[in-house]
Length: 348
Ligand code: TXA
Ligand code: MG
Figure: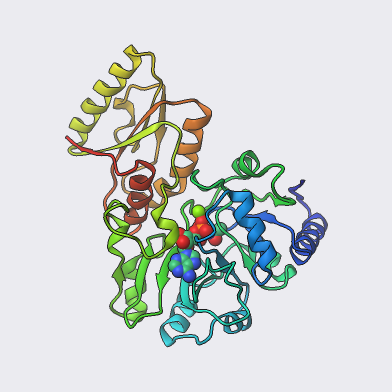
């Protein structure tokens, strides 16, 4: 596998050209986006999509997002662009928003997991946009993790999961990633519906297109409510240790967590904590992660997946996390944390 991280402009152009050729030849390239790393293949080549599912170990009923770099390509893969999609594209593309619409016949069912709809996103990362152009305009890409693992926010974790399974990694860690996957909004019905919350919030979407719903499965255990985005039904983002979210008044949360970590320590088990800067000094555990200030929820979101991966590296058996407010971007963070925790949540 070619691993590239060229620093000067000549290197960057050469590696983008090489990455584009690999995609056109039916190969796979991992690439950075402003959310998480993607595992890309030619979206219009069903053999490439098959390879993506294989490399990820992903069930093939779980559709892929088609990444584009300009509006001309957009028109060609959806049968009709709804007016609301046009407005949302204008407001948020390039950026962390994925839209679901009726697909055009050129998009293979292999890419859409057998569905008549296609998910489309124009990412905001300059390397991603240049790569998509070099690759012919349509790059199908799920997050570049093995199925079930937290999405990778740095090249290090892409290599950990994908070494030997793909042809190339475009390594361009910027340190400024959003760190959680794009917001997904379904535009096939009258009222737009959010299937996966993200950095583009419901409030931001409804400011552009009016009334917007949220799939009920976003906050419920998927075993009770089948989610409309097939991928959301799988236990996702999971660290190897057992994660529990603790809700309540901050002082009580700290006392509860410290009692738990002390009990685990007596059993010889290793513990981790995710807390906000305001409370971080209070915790006692083998590994303590500072998610940043409670007033800076975006920063917490950008670190969550990295923390979960680091706990795996540190062989942590039990993880406790503070909870976050379920509004705005906090909604996306809580959605991912709840899934990673298999909905284990304690009120104190
Ligand atoms: O930020 C992101 O969106 C990242 C980067 C790489 O762009 N990609 C990403 O892809 O998160 P993935 O495959 O890990 O998640 C895509 C989600 C899955 O839950 C899938 O079921 C859903 O999108 N999805 C894709 N196409 C769909 C469709 N036609 N209808 C409903 N859900 C769809
Ligand atoms: Mg994923």
